[in-house]
Length: 375
Image 1 (cartoon, rainbow, N blue to C red):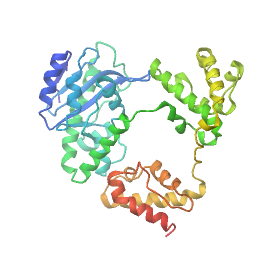
Image 2: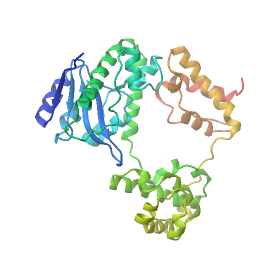
Image 3: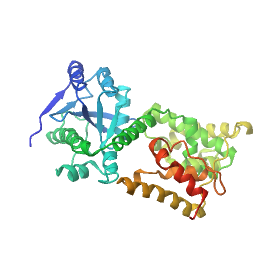
Image 4: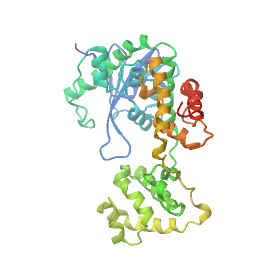
């Protein structure tokens, strides 16, 4: 079936179409972007599907994104996307806005028990019986002109996403629809939360093994890497590799030869930023004890595994009752945070991350399980 494709290549056309789209009950949104050697995604195409036709917005030609930003934030217009975390980054970078309310069809499929974390092609096949070509996913979306294959691929994505929502929507009874929207709002809220460079050391691999003095060095290394990645618009690992962070904080080299011997240290990093890193390590090592970070908690011991399994069983039982993919019910990091709050003898407290309907449905059951382990 031929798809009706409409190009939007100037600000006036975008404003005009945004006004029309905002009168609809929903729009399907997709993006094509490049992120090979940059920190931020570079938008190559924005697709909009309204169920009738596919609109292709050329971001290389648009200067005024304010009408599109207003559309994204219009509370009366539902925005439909699929597995959208990177699309959200594209929208934020391009327009300064994020879609709300947001319905992610990948999440919707999980709530309907169709499958968890299903790729777009598989879901379209499962629900609509349509086989999509996937040969353009890795092509150059910043080239102009785009090939006919690229254009067709991008248009089909937007068209079928609208059809997918139309097929799934009647099956999303309350409260499942509300849960999908709540999870969508959570995705947006997570992206809106400012990443504080000085806090990133907490997420570094093996950071819990370091002393408080060494954590002071790790904190500065992680913050420097994040700030430089943003300023240079380069991937974090291009600035300084992840696996070099821990040994740098642990061994604190004081010359370029020692620096070059650090695990996974790229010669380019030593050349470009070696002296900066040595200075940063030296200064961070002089941090007075009262300004050292608190020690980080150790990972849960192996003995906690049975308890973790019991907690997961609470989520699985609830998932079965509701006909939902069990992986959607309780995230591993939330269960681990719950266990860490009082292991081994309690009392336990529900982590901040376990919120909304999950807390209401399962919060007390999780605490009860920990109060009577093994029963």
